[in-house]
Image (tube, rainbow, N blue to C red; front, side, top):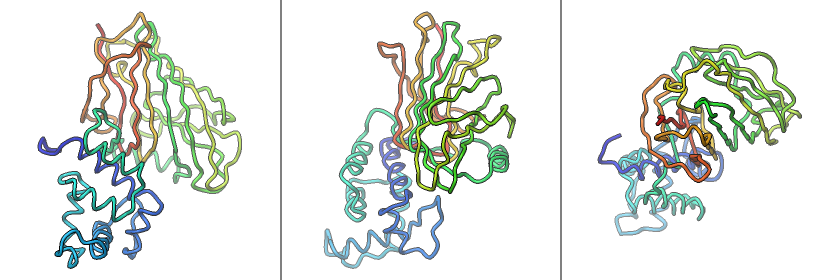
Length: 321
């Protein structure tokens, strides 16, 4: 990322990539020009083909009637990376793909700057070895998360006390009866509620500092069926030091793509932080990539909603008085 690229254009480009990757009409438009599409990759020449065909039918200037996909490929590359996302280019892609009004409006708001991060995409959520360990241990992913809400509570002692999670999942395979639960500490207790039957067993380690178990669903989901899950995590940190950096943060690692991500951290009135930041990290063990200082609201909490999040670690960190 360079200082010359507006953060708002990077956010708009990230959201645009998500729209074009999501299964459905937009992806179908460019996929018809590809022999074999890759699940997590946009074929830039195919997108250029869609733009060129639109210009043939709706030229903005005489030269547009001779638009060629190869000539537009560099424009598409710069557009999708956010390096050069002009008003005219964004208008063209919205028109060519027939992007719906609400999604187009969100693109324009992101492009113009919203004052908050609403789309977040990073280089990785965890190291390649750890990620491979997770995939080997848990097998192929058989669900996708449609929305995820974390309500985090920090106790009077300044330590993480509890997180209540609401998660809407959709089965991407037949007979889904469980989902994995991953965390970067073994010192916790997991209690399941709505939509959950029980926890499969004890937490076990699947990689360097990564632990896992499985939440069994209250009903078996058929392909495409959805359900809402509610579960709570209680942290067993009586001997922890609230001044330690690892105890002054709450993060989520997202290995794939996740929509509608909502996180809130609430502090005890007797343990208010000096500063709170919303941040993203370069993996579980990496440095902070970007951060934004926040102010607490009247309920002593900070909140962030993300329309999309992918391949990153994101959350809050804070300092004490």
